[in-house]
Image (cartoon, rainbow, N blue to C red; front, side, top):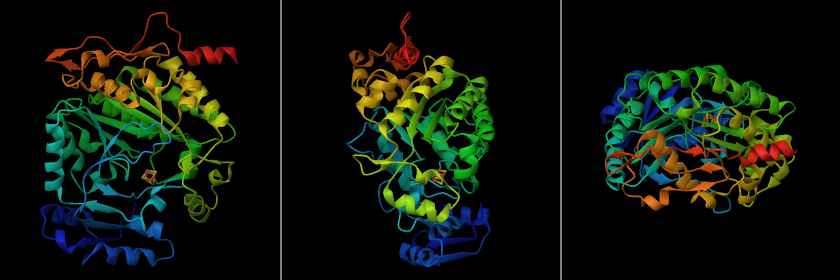
Length: 415
Ligand code: SF4
């Protein structure tokens, strides 16, 4: 990571956080009148995407910090909420859709934290179950190099009992998470991939063993964990390679402490393909055969996605029959053929994940009718649990019902 210059919006020059970041970063700084000045400078360089990773722009978030994740109505989405602390990333993944999402993309951090805190207080006052992440438009932990944002958020979430914070990363920047009284309201999460993909497509990210080491340290510090195999990338030998990653994961970490594991195959809007070809000339990932999905994104053909998901899910189930696995941006057919149920069978994907968060993070379920927290499907019991109801612990767990055979196991043994 090489931040070579700091741009400071004139509106935030005097904020203490601006001054603190400036002192910690120690690079030349320039005060700008507006975002346009920064965007024009970045856009005028030969590789604006790369340039946008090498400067840091401090500004005021003019919109909302708390947002709905921009899912799509065409695929099952999980009703995730975003805490929009900043944009873009100094790491460099070939498939990263942020390369074309912003025009041009710029590493930008919002320093008006008084507004962020006020919005969070309003969210917490609703006493609804929320899963909130900072890792949709950026990596959650890169900002800990220059700010105390992880500590700020972990402390805030620890003091309430309805929402969980997910910090999703490809770094090992976990130092700030140590010695915090997190009250299990923060989930430490990693995106995982095979060593080959990390080496060739995820420049500047931590190795797979370093990510798992960092997760093990967080587990030791009492944090619940989550993992995202996303994007799964198809290449010769990929199935064996993903299985090795899964085996390593479960040899180091406790399945009982995993809130969820998501799976999603490679997908991107068409303009990203040209960016990959230009910026990652050795990359092969853009040359696979793709189909255009209902949301306009390019994806592998459905039978290929289903085949890979089945292999991976079967391996996860061997090691962790109870862990919640979900698919990112897939339709009911893919769910049924890989997991053996559809989200509707368990009250919706959002409900399924809320219940897992309730169990692992000890959320207060008073606001949810008891009848809505009991569901079974596909041999799995999605009863909510381990959370709290009217002050008492709810004893059941998300578990495979005794004697039930998971449908993926059945599917695999037939083929
Ligand atoms: S780590 Fe995430 S945000 Fe950063 S470049 Fe890779 S995909 Fe994009």
